[in-house]
Length: 204
Image (cartoon, rainbow, N blue to C red):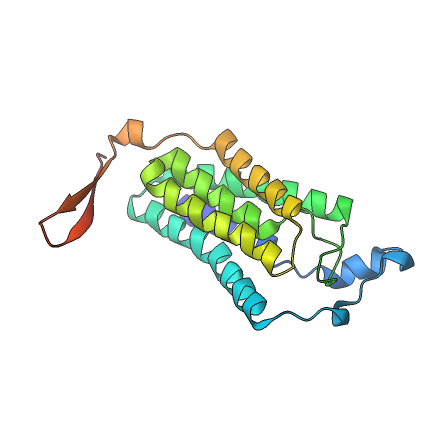
């Protein structure tokens, strides 16, 4: 039963940071001078596309990592993921409600830090710490894209994304321990001359 509880907590924490319905509350508690008007900003088609892609990646990245942990039955890794997700969510929410920074697009007062970036870097750092750079490097590349995309689409300033990255990666580094040493995890490229693949093995 515990693995399913871990899964629920991870998904709930990451989804709540990524898609939090707090705009109305932010507006109602903000001073009149800080009320924002989202109608004054209009994204270009390119910005809209990038924004949607970051929304998708911010959920797809942790979801795929979760599936990988389930396939390997890495229950300890799931627990560490719960701790990472909880720490990331807590730090992100506290700062969003404390700082109340206006977003570049004027949609609300929760720009700092970037939740999407925090979630993405938490996942990337968790993968890297738990399974090594063979898994972490691609995840970090996607996380960097999410951070850049949030700035490009005017949902965040660059320092919002930087803070989110630090929170997510920092949380993972605090709570996550390597899986490879315990299970002799090995990852290497393979080829038959015309096709290229990846070979992975580990011991229970």
